[in-house]
Image (cartoon, rainbow, N blue to C red; front, side, top):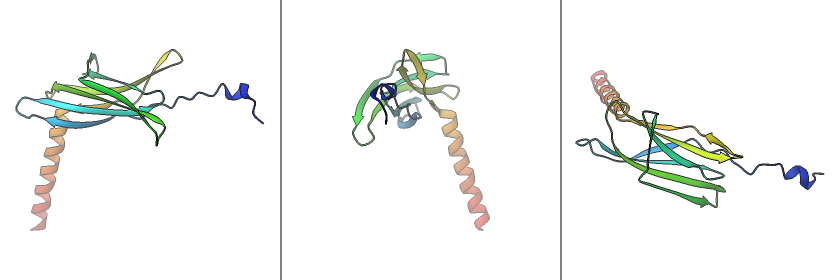
Length: 133
Protein backbone atom coordinates (compact mmCIF):
# COMPACT_ATOMS: atom_id res chain seq x y z
CA UNK A 1 0.00 0.00 0.00
CA UNK A 2 1.34 3.44 -0.95
CA UNK A 3 1.54 6.22 1.54
CA UNK A 4 0.80 9.80 0.62
CA UNK A 5 4.40 10.83 1.38
CA UNK A 6 5.65 8.55 -1.39
CA UNK A 7 3.09 9.85 -3.89
CA UNK A 8 3.91 13.46 -3.07
CA UNK A 9 7.32 13.01 -4.75
CA UNK A 10 5.76 12.12 -8.11
CA UNK A 11 6.18 14.92 -10.64
CA UNK A 12 3.11 15.90 -12.69
CA UNK A 13 5.38 17.22 -15.46
CA UNK A 14 5.11 15.75 -18.95
CA UNK A 15 8.08 16.50 -21.25
CA UNK A 16 7.21 18.67 -24.22
CA UNK A 17 6.54 16.96 -27.52
CA UNK A 18 8.88 17.51 -30.46
CA UNK A 19 8.27 20.85 -32.13
CA UNK A 20 6.23 20.63 -35.34
CA UNK A 21 6.62 23.30 -38.00
CA UNK A 22 4.19 24.24 -40.78
CA UNK A 23 4.51 26.87 -43.52
CA UNK A 24 1.40 29.07 -43.34
CA UNK A 25 2.28 31.37 -46.24
CA UNK A 26 5.22 32.04 -48.51
CA UNK A 27 5.90 34.88 -50.96
CA UNK A 28 8.56 33.72 -53.41
CA UNK A 29 9.06 37.25 -54.79
CA UNK A 30 9.93 38.89 -51.46
CA UNK A 31 11.11 35.81 -49.54
CA UNK A 32 8.63 36.50 -46.71
CA UNK A 33 7.58 33.30 -44.94
CA UNK A 34 5.04 32.80 -42.16
CA UNK A 35 5.68 29.73 -39.99
CA UNK A 36 3.54 28.08 -37.31
CA UNK A 37 5.23 26.00 -34.61
CA UNK A 38 3.40 23.73 -32.16
CA UNK A 39 4.27 21.59 -29.14
CA UNK A 40 2.46 20.15 -26.09
CA UNK A 41 3.33 19.26 -22.51
CA UNK A 42 2.76 19.90 -18.80
CA UNK A 43 3.48 22.64 -18.02
CA UNK A 44 2.82 24.26 -21.40
CA UNK A 45 6.07 24.77 -23.33
CA UNK A 46 7.37 28.19 -24.23
CA UNK A 47 8.26 28.23 -27.94
CA UNK A 48 11.37 30.24 -28.81
CA UNK A 49 12.56 31.18 -32.31
CA UNK A 50 16.12 31.64 -33.50
CA UNK A 51 17.80 32.31 -36.83
CA UNK A 52 20.94 30.33 -37.70
CA UNK A 53 20.69 28.75 -34.25
CA UNK A 54 22.18 31.82 -32.58
CA UNK A 55 20.09 34.97 -32.58
CA UNK A 56 16.78 34.64 -30.73
CA UNK A 57 14.01 36.60 -32.41
CA UNK A 58 10.55 37.62 -31.16
CA UNK A 59 7.45 35.83 -32.40
CA UNK A 60 4.48 37.54 -34.06
CA UNK A 61 1.90 35.69 -31.98
CA UNK A 62 1.87 32.91 -29.41
CA UNK A 63 -0.76 31.10 -27.40
CA UNK A 64 -1.41 28.19 -25.06
CA UNK A 65 -4.63 26.26 -24.48
CA UNK A 66 -5.62 23.27 -22.37
CA UNK A 67 -6.48 20.12 -24.35
CA UNK A 68 -9.07 18.25 -22.28
CA UNK A 69 -8.63 15.08 -24.37
CA UNK A 70 -4.85 14.72 -24.08
CA UNK A 71 -4.63 16.48 -20.69
CA UNK A 72 -1.72 18.52 -22.05
CA UNK A 73 -1.16 22.20 -22.71
CA UNK A 74 -1.02 22.86 -26.48
CA UNK A 75 1.32 25.75 -27.34
CA UNK A 76 1.69 27.47 -30.71
CA UNK A 77 3.74 30.33 -32.04
CA UNK A 78 3.76 32.21 -35.35
CA UNK A 79 6.79 33.87 -36.92
CA UNK A 80 7.04 35.92 -40.12
CA UNK A 81 10.50 36.69 -41.48
CA UNK A 82 12.41 37.20 -44.73
CA UNK A 83 13.99 33.90 -45.67
CA UNK A 84 17.13 33.44 -47.74
CA UNK A 85 18.92 30.27 -48.83
CA UNK A 86 21.49 30.60 -46.04
CA UNK A 87 19.09 31.28 -43.14
CA UNK A 88 17.44 28.61 -41.05
CA UNK A 89 14.58 29.39 -38.66
CA UNK A 90 14.54 27.14 -35.59
CA UNK A 91 11.63 26.69 -33.17
CA UNK A 92 12.49 25.16 -29.79
CA UNK A 93 10.06 24.16 -27.02
CA UNK A 94 11.35 25.11 -23.57
CA UNK A 95 9.93 24.28 -20.14
CA UNK A 96 11.14 25.56 -16.79
CA UNK A 97 10.82 22.85 -14.13
CA UNK A 98 12.39 22.68 -10.69
CA UNK A 99 14.38 25.83 -11.43
CA UNK A 100 16.05 24.53 -14.58
CA UNK A 101 15.35 25.07 -18.27
CA UNK A 102 14.59 21.91 -20.24
CA UNK A 103 14.69 22.19 -24.05
CA UNK A 104 12.72 19.85 -26.28
CA UNK A 105 13.52 18.72 -29.82
CA UNK A 106 13.57 21.66 -32.25
CA UNK A 107 12.01 21.99 -35.69
CA UNK A 108 13.80 23.80 -38.52
CA UNK A 109 12.79 25.62 -41.71
CA UNK A 110 15.18 26.45 -44.53
CA UNK A 111 13.94 27.69 -47.90
CA UNK A 112 16.88 25.97 -49.63
CA UNK A 113 15.74 22.60 -48.26
CA UNK A 114 12.22 23.29 -49.55
CA UNK A 115 13.61 24.12 -53.00
CA UNK A 116 15.77 20.99 -52.89
CA UNK A 117 12.67 18.90 -52.18
CA UNK A 118 10.85 20.48 -55.12
CA UNK A 119 13.79 19.80 -57.46
CA UNK A 120 13.91 16.16 -56.34
CA UNK A 121 10.17 15.84 -56.97
CA UNK A 122 10.46 17.33 -60.48
CA UNK A 123 13.46 15.15 -61.39
CA UNK A 124 11.68 12.05 -60.05
CA UNK A 125 8.58 12.85 -62.10
CA UNK A 126 10.69 13.40 -65.24
CA UNK A 127 12.52 10.08 -64.77
CA UNK A 128 9.21 8.32 -64.18
CA UNK A 129 7.84 9.69 -67.46
CA UNK A 130 11.04 8.71 -69.33
CA UNK A 131 10.87 5.12 -68.06
CA UNK A 132 7.18 4.83 -68.97
CA UNK A 133 8.00 5.15 -72.66
